[in-house]
Length: 150
Image 1 (spheres, one colour):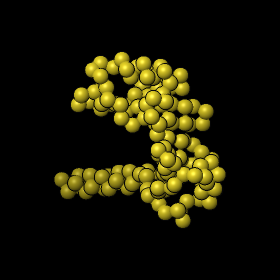
Image 2 (cartoon, one colour; image 1 turned 120 degrees about the horizontal axis):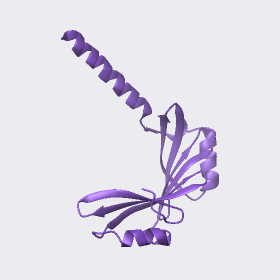
Image 3 (tube, helix red, strand yellow; image 1 turned 135 degrees about the vertical axis):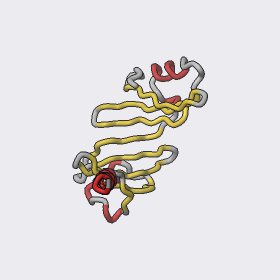
Image 4 (tube, helix red, strand yellow; image 1 turned 120 degrees about the vertical axis):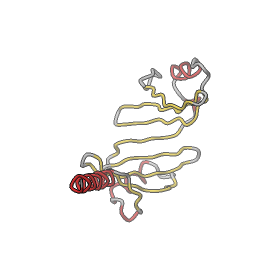
């Protein structure tokens, strides 16, 4: 019995360490690679930085810059060399493609639209829309043309 408890404790501790290693970690500007800072400043010179984080997933380290520019909240993920991997930007639902707006208008029961984000990964653009239908909250994803993908 003691051996089983001990083995279970060791396994639980190992899983916690592994999860912590893959978790997003808030960091200071001093811990962000210069290439990331330069790339962000060049692409979004008027944005106000709100924070930085680092995440290691599948052995790959990414750095995220959280910012705001006017009404737009933006999270940009970079590789250490300053190359952009993902850009997430808030936007008004009225700026969604017509197809996406039609899908949202046709939801039954009627859905209340919450946050809307434009997500760019390389050349791929998707729109993530958070909606609430009664007590149910869900995310709907559209492609660039407004076709529902999720």
